[in-house]
Length: 337
Image 1 (spheres, rainbow, N blue to C red):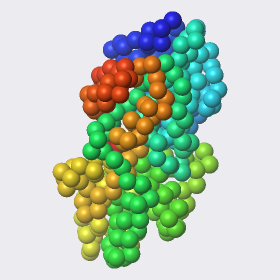
Image 2: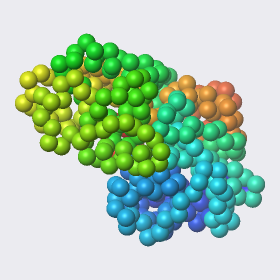
Image 3: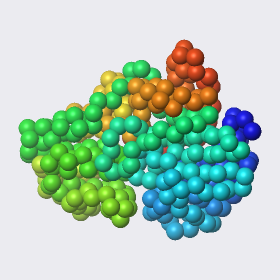
Image 4: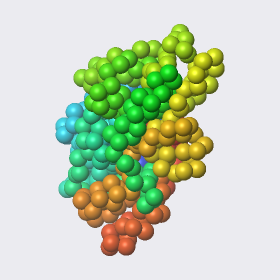
C-alpha cells in the first residue's frame, strides 16, 4: 500500500479505512484517535476514543465523564492494532498528553503531528521526530516572520516588571490548557514561588497536571478575591476576566497576553496590553522547517495554518508537499497559540 493512500479526507476529517477510525474528527464519529485536549481537536460525543491517559483526563474535566461511549488509554510508544492498521502515539510537546499519531499499514508509515512545538516545556514530554513516508504537519506559525524567543526570556520580562511595579497586579491573559501551566512552571523554575492566582477553568486543569506529576506550586482561586489584594501578585486567566476583576482596583494592573501572535506588532498593540509576551505552544517557522528536514518524509502534507508558505519552502528544497486545507481546526480561543 502507498502511504498516501492510508488516509483520506472526509467532511469529518482524516479517515483511516484500514483501521476504521478518524483522526481528531470535527464531527461525532464511531471511532476517534485524539491527539490532545484542545477543543478544536478533542470533541465530545464520539462512540469510542483512543488517546493518552492525560488527554482523556482533560476531556473528562472539560466535557464530563460521559464524553464518549468508550475510551482507551494508550501509553507513548505502545503499538495498538486497529483493524489492519497499527497505531502508536508519540510525544508532540504541545501540552500535557499531546501526541503525534503513527499509523502503519503493510509497511507504509504516516505520522500526524497534531499541534506541536520543539521548544522546551517542563510540563510535557518533548517532541520526538518519527521516520515516516508521509508527515502531516500543522503550520499555525508557518511564515518566516514567526520566530519565537526562548520562553524563559519572556518570563524574565514578567518578573522584572513585577519588581518594578510591586504595587500593581500583573494580569496575564493565557489559555487555560497548556499555556497557563507552562507559564506557571517556568515562573517556578525562575524562582517565583509566591502564590499565583488562577480562574476556575485554569484551576481545574492545573489539578489534572498535578495528578500527572507536574508540580505547579501554590495556586489560589481568583473567585472572591478583592482586586486590591492582588497587588504585587501574578494572575493568570483568560483575557475576558480582566475588566470585571479590576474594575474597582486602586491601581490598574499591568496587563499582558501570552501568545505567539504577540510577534505581530498590530496584534500585540490590540490585545497585548502593556507587556506582550511571545510565548507559544506551537512550532515557529524555524522549528517547522527544521522538523521537516530532520524527518525527510517522502511527502509533506500541511494543514491548519499558513500552508502556502510552507508548501513553497518544501518544494524549493525538492521535497514533495501539498496543502490539506482541513476545516474546523484552530477555532478554539487564539490564546492557546
